[in-house]
Amino acid sequence: MHSEKISILIVDDHALVRAGVTRILVDEPDLLVIGEASSGEKAIEFITMHMPDIVIMDARMPGIGGIEATHRLLAMYPDLKIIAISAVVSGAIPSQMLRAGARSFLTKNVSVDELCKAIRMVQSGQRYVTPDVATQMAVDPFNKNGGSLFDKLSRREMQIAQMLTDGKKVSRIAEYLSLSPKTVYSYRYRIFEKLGIHSDVELTILAVKDGLAGDARELDELPRFSHFAG
Image (cartoon, rainbow, N blue to C red; front, top):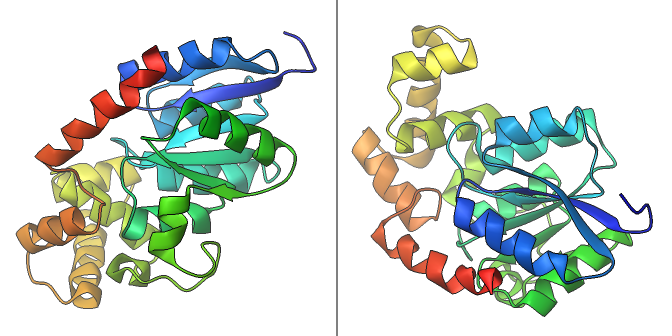
């Protein structure tokens, strides 16, 4: 590995996206992809062995997801630079990723030039947010005041809310998070109370509207991003 190059880990649950980003970055003389990971858990595992300069982190993935993975990685490695990337422009995803500590937020329809620009800016200590995201978030995208209902949730509540919208059963969530089912039910109640809802169905509908859960329209984003496969 050439030390002068910016080393990059790509984290995304879509193999096509990982391969596409890797392929375009190969053509950049100052950038070097040193690994790929399909989940937040695998990203953490990789980084304990190989420390990259930059992590390109998909915001929404199965398992702990990009938001929680960003929290955990920066708790362990405060100087790590994370670029968040998502098909979602508005709602809770951008604000949650930036609050978790990401230095940049990009949408998946960015150009190759914009992606490379963001990588170089973040490596030099700057921040960068895709203009359409900055417009949606208004004023200062790095502020602490969010406009999403989901911003009312604590970090743990957000994690459980995402798992519920992914269709995970309470028993499975309890096992995964090493909590008792009773504790998960308590979190679920608090989530419903904070969001003003009464069921998992309402939670899922709200999550889709706010960009935390996918719907059929998101499938359209993958081909748009596949120009990275060039």
